[in-house]
Length: 220
Image (spheres, rainbow, N blue to C red):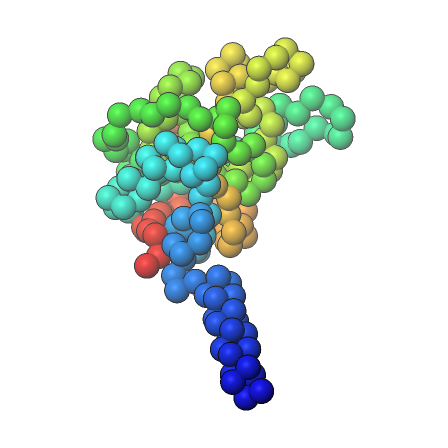
């Protein structure tokens, strides 16, 4: 009886240890999704990435992260637009964009552009992070933005019904690839989104007071 009891206790203890290891990983990378921490002058933002949905986008973003590229860049663009009533075509856009310019608003040299994975990536829902680009669909490099509200106008679209009457231009039908979401610090994103903006040279929607990205890193 004692032998059987000891064996049973050993099995139960092993199961409990395995369960604890599963729920309490030794570091932030132990789970299935990588996590990055953004230290900004407005506060800390923690983002979970989704490589299964957008593997090339996540890999490209982490190259910039691991190289220290984002250190002392800024959030250089804030767009705040009123959303339409429920049921109306939603062409509004509410974003906070950064990662490509210095405090002096000088553009940094980047790696070559990557493919646009908007068709397989996440939707541009509130709280997601997505890659910015120019009007050319295959121009994604380093800049990213946070979706402060649901921004369906930025999603990949295939049909006229999906595109709707209020989309910005033909380039938006290819979408903007969302590849992660904020898991902590959305209050910081909202704070940046409340910034007063103005025109600066050829750039519009530039915050009067720039928020600096001190660094972005993967926690060890």
